[in-house]
Image 1 (cartoon, rainbow, N blue to C red):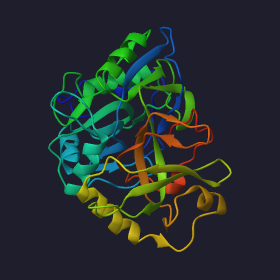
Image 2 (cartoon, rainbow, N blue to C red):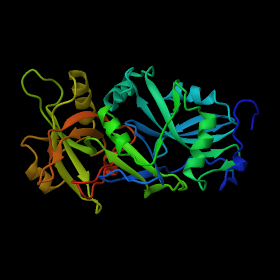
Image 3 (cartoon, rainbow, N blue to C red):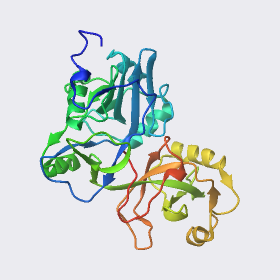
Image 4 (spheres, one colour):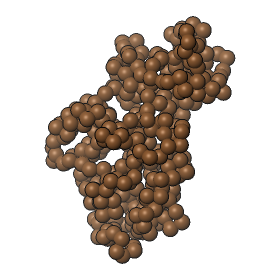
Amino acid sequence: MRKGRHQIEPGSIAGARRAALPPGIVPQFPTLVTAVPSGDQWLHEVKYDGYRIIATLARDGVRLLTRHGKDWTARFATIGAALAALVPDEALVDGEIVHQEPDGTISFAALARDLSEGRTEQLVYYVFDLLHFDGYCLTAARLEDRKRALAGLVPPDSTGPVRYSRHVVGDGSQFFAECCRRRFEGIVSKRRDAPYRSGHGRDWLKVKCVAREEFAIIGWTDPQGSREGIGSLLLGFYDGAGKLHYAGRVGTGFSGTVSRDLRRRLGELSIAAPPNAAIAAAAPRRSHWVRPELVAEVRFTEWTPERRLRHPVFLGLREDKTGHDVIINSPAAASTAGY
């Protein structure tokens, strides 16, 4: 460890063990629940509405990896430069990159535009976990100890492109209400004493303020009147058995520029026939079909009894997933958005 730049002694953390820095890690994901857990064994953080990123800081540079291990270092060069300035010998950090407005609100739609147009001015990387530091693996340590070490690397009062994700301890109901009032997506509640476990589990729970999901784009309809590009996107999702289902269509939320760009990209994925007979029967006549490779993030009010979306609004494309990643076993309750 380089003395004088930070005060973390990883070997003193209970559960830390000597280990080589891994090239990456499968992230830990929260399970969706309908109520905020109570009790002092939980801490609660904002649920950020952006791209989950694992950052590897090593002597030969910084790498930024998506949840599926795609290297997006070049796309987030300003974040990488800010991380490099932290100068640990090596570290593995977990967090979320978002677009943050001056008033503190976070917008996934704006983040999608930032990526498509190469803008970085309002990108912020909120870090919420430290998994490896200067020769020590920390995944077996308590979350609270990992966050305490993280605060030694990224001070909680940081205001630059890399910021510490603050939390509250204990009853999170008031925190959840405040996050909803401030138009955040929701909160993530985490067991204070739990180790870091890759994949889904119940040590991390998420509660959402609004209904939103990711959907595979399976087709489009033609525009009407003076509109250009597309009329609406046809949406679908896979169940646990791998069958593709129709979820309805979304025709609002995209500008003329976005609509034309979507038409171009969808045209490159065009196929002649619908995915299956059930989707063909449910979708509008004269629909155009595509391979389900693109993923749309959609806000809506509720699921109908027929498993269709009510009042959907398109928020943007998710570039870190493909349509085959969108698996929803229980449309009335499940969610795959965010982290």
